[in-house]
Image (cartoon, rainbow, N blue to C red; front, top):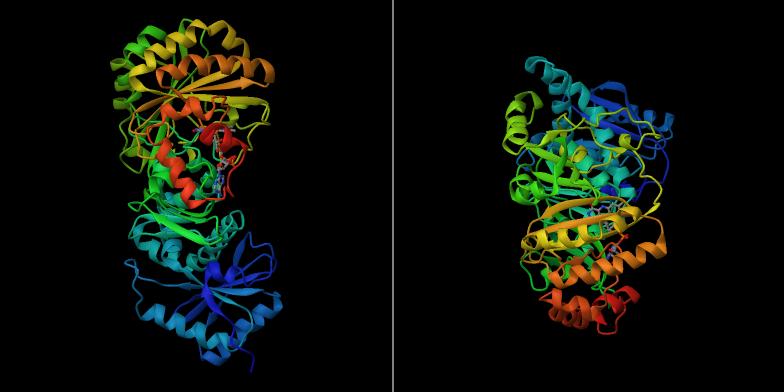
Length: 526
Ligand SMILES: Cc1cc2nc3c(=O)[nH]c(=O)nc-3n(C[C@H](O)[C@H](O)[C@H](O)COP(=O)(O)OP(=O)(O)OC[C@H]3O[C@@H](n4cnc5c(N)ncnc54)[C@H](O)[C@@H]3O)c2cc1C
């Protein structure tokens, strides 16, 4: 008799399996067992057989024969947990089956929470307009394929992160992820499971750890920076141990936006909400005076707002408004109201929608579609998840300005407009709501971000950004931690009321300075 195979949650099981090799997905019904098999790379799964249940011994023998034929590396069993998270008789009998089956094989058996895959099938079928009566039978047949496909999707997302587990805690409405996962992978996974993050930055490739450490933000008057979704952190600290810190605990506000100064973040817990749809609309050419006069009305007109422009023309050239749709289905959204509101009330001129075919030659093809509602995960970033970003032939800098100072900041920048535009691809202006993180540029201040994507002319951009910083810092503007930044610690410290506290907390967590680097020395410690 072999040693019983381990029976583990999917993520734990994944570290027991070899890197390649088919996985066998099993959906245990009372009369049948649905069997699906993945390819050796675990990218696709297809249903292969429905085993009619007779007796445990003969059923198990058939499953083992299928596994042997396919040279399988492991099994994945759907665990039918109740929607409230409790386990009823079906889950118990699945566990009992797994226990008994594990005595007959050495292949690790994974248990995969089936709730989410059933929900995914249901959503898919609603999309395909299958009638409610028919839906129940189709779901039963489809679930085995989905069980394994969804499981594999989750499994692949893990492989990209430091610690591959994504755990959704529905009761707490939070997701725990490996810190190295990108927002693109995380947001597509969350949307498929029916959840959302509150906001995203302009592109999907950045990681959760890199974004929260630098107070990376999206836009919207009511939207705080991405770090504000953090409710828990796990990090390797200077003595090599693993430390957890939760929202509400001492030092949390120091440790989230912390530029890596407290240690290596391994896992992050983020607040989630039910998934939602967004529609983005483009408007063009608003005169600068009018824009500044109506700034609050325009920036608050939609869930998220961006202005893209150069500086020397008479108008700010493009305004993008991302409207959060109350209803889940686009058809239920009253688009005329949106257009009336934005067009007439604000006097904005509609722009050509950028819904263009995706070709690599056309840079607009990098953008998510306009004028069409879609999931938050495919609208809150500007660029599409499936399109690789263009090579980084650019330099970025951004200045975070308290809202009351915007008018003065724009005057300063417009006075340098010709020189700036000669080096500029585009500026993006966004709004960020106040938060509580000690090193956040929006600490207790509603803020406007004025971003510059510069051409890669290193010396000239170096000079002009030094000049811009020197002119804007006296207004209280803070350079973005994750972009080009010149000011030293002595210049930056007065902008951050909790900077002294931050330094002292870092010193007590990392007295030997194991996590110090040249960046921290220059901009934080001095
Ligand atoms: C094309 C482009 C578009 C951008 N768009 C936006 C935008 O829309 N909004 C915005 O605010 N910013 C934006 N940025 C800036 C960007 O968000 C930051 O530079 C961010 O840090 C990039 O994330 P990353 O995953 O590349 O981080 P990295 O460069 O990998 O990390 C940045 C820093 O975070 C810390 N860090 C990273 N991982 C860990 C860890 N595991 N533990 C502890 N500390 C860690 C370190 O201090 C590190 O130096 C953009 C940048 C680019 C290049």
